[in-house]
Image 1: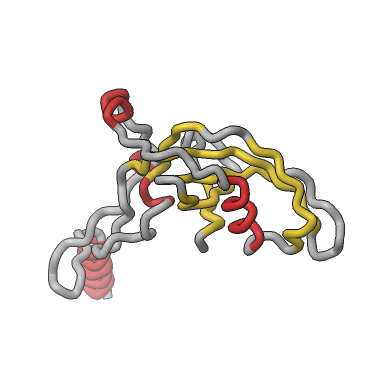
Image 2: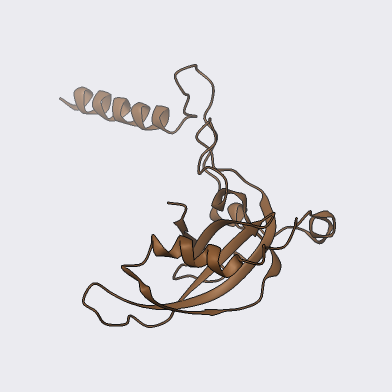
Length: 170
């Protein structure tokens, strides 16, 4: 009986160790290891920022571009009251504006450069009451709105914030 327990224990230990090995996809190639959150939000270096191409600033109708995109997010877009800050050069983690995963299943690491517009919105909810001002960030590249971001609860590393929800495009 003792021998059976030892064999069962050894088998379980072997399965655990095999499970800890590198994962492979159907072609047998190793899958990339998940990146640490710090890697994904690591700010660009001073050298990267000095050579970054931020592109053209937002078009003159940048407010309308934001309001149009927000109309698909808000319950009552007609009731929305906006407060905008002037556009400024900025960077975001690349995966906020590029497709979420690369073909290997890994997250795009790097930076997207462009222009940001911080703004707040106060709009009515489904019950007809105003919800209070909520903060958003519009990210523009070459005059066009590329993403609407809503800072998450951590609020510290993209532009200094650790996390933002991508609210548009969905």
